[in-house]
Length: 144
Length: 223
Image (cartoon, rainbow over all chains, first blue to last red; front, side, top):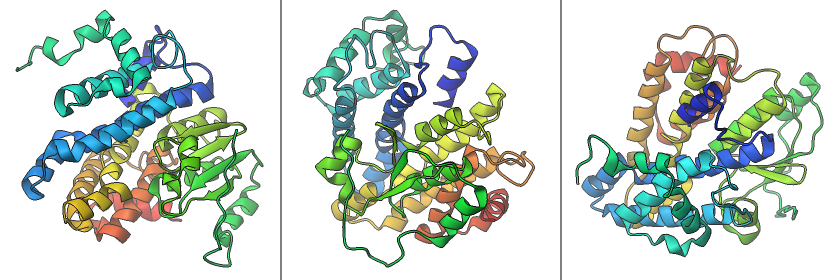
């Protein structure tokens, strides 16, 4: 989050946060739902401990947290319109949504179509070259 | 906007601590339209309370008892079912970091973030180590699942995460000087640190003195 905020402050175009403080807070809150509400519960060090120390299965542990979070995200943007999370311009909310949504599908077998607006936004974001270039399979260290 | 006030028989006769009221009297607080949904034991709510106090903003305390956040009326306010939520006029803000950033933008004094972008990013990072790196692993709903589904003990589960995080925080500010996390002025780093350090001690039996700079900063903030 601070990295993204720094980039936004230092390179203001294109703007990734609304100017209105309340709307900006709303976009940031969406990011934090992902950043602190969902991802920390599915990351590798947590899954490793669940599996080794608590003899659990990573997916069983993580899936309810992710489903809860996606439900919350879907509700949070249910009144929004436009191609992306908060309208027709990409914001930090989209930056945070894509990695979370794609890992939910790929790693935890979640069906995004259970969350219709999220699914539609993800489909639109996947058409953007900036998002395509950042995908894991396009990175130099990618391993299948 | 549907404004929820949850009524229950009071658990104690005191409706607000006199310490908080003293702060307001001493600091000549501005009145505002703020209502904070908070639980006394929630460290995220605690951050919002500190930030509001630092900005000298009065707020109404909307008490959330354990379980209230799971009810449909509150889910309409915050679909994440977390506290805090801050009502600002007819809008609701959620998530402690955006709430603090909003307050800092609308009420710039005293400034809770450095102006220099790199330094600001550093303070924010300290906050996020706590906000996303530590607290989510120790919060109520996670502990409930560890205990009920995995027959774990909450201290055994949480303590290593917190110790790891405190080690990281200590290292992160090891070259800093001054009374507080990032110098002699309070920043959001301190707003996030105090509740986390307190929970580490009271709920998880961690000795803060294992982290000397953190311990010194906490001592200063407690004043």
